[in-house]
Length: 500
Image (tube, rainbow, N blue to C red; front, side, top):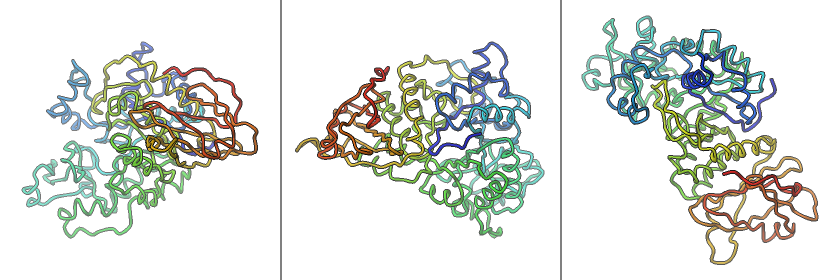
């Protein structure tokens, strides 16, 4: 298998939804290993480097019961999937009953076969790992209760919603994010337990034998400082471990699988710390939030980060991009996230402009009409960004100056370049609801008597004087939430008009 590109493209798929959708499409029962080759080829042909199959592990019967009877979830099911029945509720994929393949997806050998299949196409397989908790009825809650956070009766009386009793009478804590109510279908693991750490590392090593990477749910909750802040009072005088779980676990896996990919869902400004502990990529929620609600000047400041950030404008935890941003702005945001350094993270349904966000407990989706214009836009964007310049080139954030005195609209333009040998790519985005003009000083690669700017997104070419684009700079005039993706210095062949 070829070496993975820098700044890779990831595609997240809800595994249960995926096989059900394909079963309906092909009129037969599809499992992971029997997914037709052309489905994987479609992703490979659009330049994806990593396929994240979300929710492949065995779900919990107890979690499913919680999901069936939770009033808030039932409301979400009715809103998202009118006419749903109990058969449509599978339970949360993040309340893990066992790190074995969900039987709805096939037999236990199918994950390895899928990996081989997509590896042959040049892609890598990523799966989930949930470090903070397991299902409330996971077998370890009975056989190894010492691997979980246990509570005394005084703590249970103080916070009855935080804990639950096991059949043996021991009270265990539910998994918890300190800013939200507990996840009542889970049991909180104890990261100060040496036995728990060893057991988790063994699970990770076993999974790493059949996958190329893992996405770690809420990875910052396993940091000592965070775990201590949430659970110190409950743990009392329980002995503390000084070493970080992630340093140990990532080190163990890398000894056997040096190219394994570690992606952390992370928030609260702890992303850099997780990168230092070994994660290849961490969620960039800061950029997502700024793209949704901040002016271009604030967005610009968020772009100056290292290439270990996972950039996204939707995923299974967030609303659909065309809903959250609005259709037009979502496409501008897509250009930004797909052309800056880091892991570029796309979500199943994003390319087709899907609008319905499916609760992860459901195993059936509402059918939607594909937005053909959005799909054509994404196919064009992915084709452009498949160029090696966007992966192996040198990225530079560029200044945009006034087009003329008194015109401040240049502040709404974001611009950067990718230099790869003699090849130069220039991206300019008007991230505002109005027309914007500005100038960008561009240093041409090599020497040339003419400068040809081919806008690969719009399908037109412009001939410019090299002296002008060096000073005062290339003149840019862009409409509301529009973008240029220039190949600079290439020929002037028009590549066809855009379809969006």
